[in-house]
Length: 157
Image (tube, rainbow, N blue to C red; front, side, top):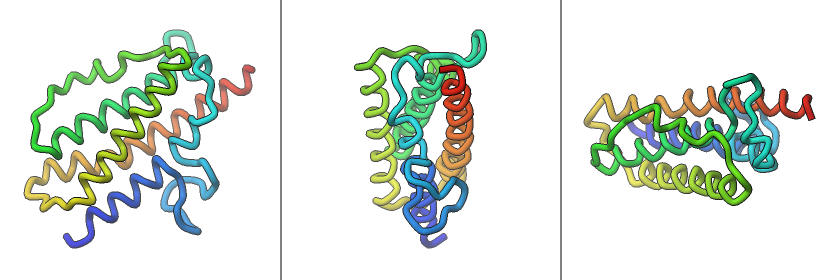
C-alpha cells in the first residue's frame, strides 16, 4: 500500500508529540496533548506515585512504552529480540535524573522508529506490519491511562 508509512508516522507523531495540524485524529487539539507534552512537567515523585495501592505508576507506563518501541525498532532492523513482557514494567519509581533519562530514552526510541519508518519498508511480512500498527492504539491507550493518573495525582496534591 502506497503511503502507509507516512500514515503510520502521522498517527504516531500525534500520539507522542501532539497535534501538528489544525485537526487531530484521536487526541485533543491542544498544545502538549500528546504523550511527551502530558508528562513533560511531571515531577519524578508524581511519576513514581501509584494512584491505588499496588497499582502501576506513570514512570512504569513510560518505561513500558520505551521498552515496546525498543523491541519494535529491533524487529525493524531485522533483529530477533527477546520479548519478556514482564521486563517492560520493571521501573516503577524514579528520582530526578532517572526520570529525565527515561523521558530522553523514550524520545530516542520514538525518533529511531520514525527514522526507520521514513526509510521505507516493503511490509513483506504482515506480522511486522501488525507489530507497527499496534503501536498506535497502544500509545493512545497509555496516553489515556497516564492522563487519568495525572488528574488523580493532581487532585490529591
